[in-house]
Image 1: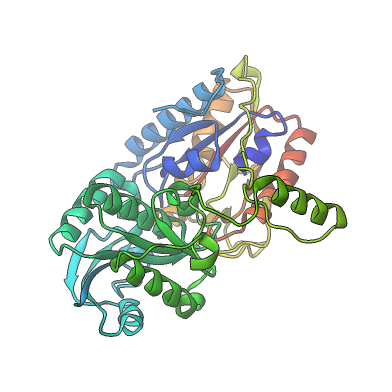
Image 2: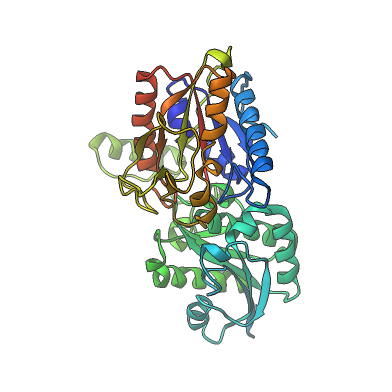
Length: 76
Length: 348
């Protein structure tokens, strides 16, 4: 899906937990996330902390979209 | 002599449980478990499953390096002649686990390995260079058909026999070229092939061209505070009640859902349609799958230009590559029609 959308000229950031799969599939901008069933959250945290964590990940994703790259890049 | 086999399976096939048990840590049990029985039958007296190593798919994929090391240590104790992983069919995380274990067994222990997967399993592309992966059906319905060639190849490897071509043995090509002698020289074979091609007859190439399915990165966003961002997800996020009935696996469709009246996703207004992982965390707070709450706040604060009024969703679980491509192409068209500048795509 990532490739099919990116092909049309839109930058796509793939936020996922199993980075090797994303690399194999061919995503170009990759932001590693928390866990498979809850990539953008962590139920063990308080609601506030969880949202902070999510915001940090989203900020990283937005940063990746503003970064010029010429090859697959994992934004750790 | 009886060959010693170690079998690697996930928590589901071990009968420990489904997704709620997918974080099960590696354990080893003496003898055969689950699908091991079918393998044991196929081996007859020639080989014996000495032990079965079991690990939850989520635990494995979230702890790739440590899980692999733990499992290798367990396998090593039994000094097997051959190791069997799976089969994993089209289960993505299970395929990755089987492939990673296979690679490590072959690399670190120098023991031959056989696995089995459906060709679209991501484990195939990641690990086919390192292991014999028998091509299987896409679900456990194909278990019987998978066991036979897997067991046969495993015995041949244990006996240190010469292994034939992928076509002869039923494994997925590993990308290895082998020199061999033929009766006819190359020029003659090439002309024969060409004649067949010209006549429109079937011919088999001796060197299939690799497929490079890569897309170059799109240009970065210059000013994020003016950009329209859209959310797409393969994690199955849908409005409460799953109005389009997107299937929990092998999705036959995708959905487009409005964010107009939503600032925050919760258990009242949304859920996940995705099977294959424990849905509790997503159903309690779907922002954990698509970060709507944060992006809405950022939109209000002017950190981003705007959040596109719809989110797009399908279920990645077992959905064919061809279908995923089709959905994404349609989604991309709609994104362009709405002037979207960049996409956040989340996967579970």
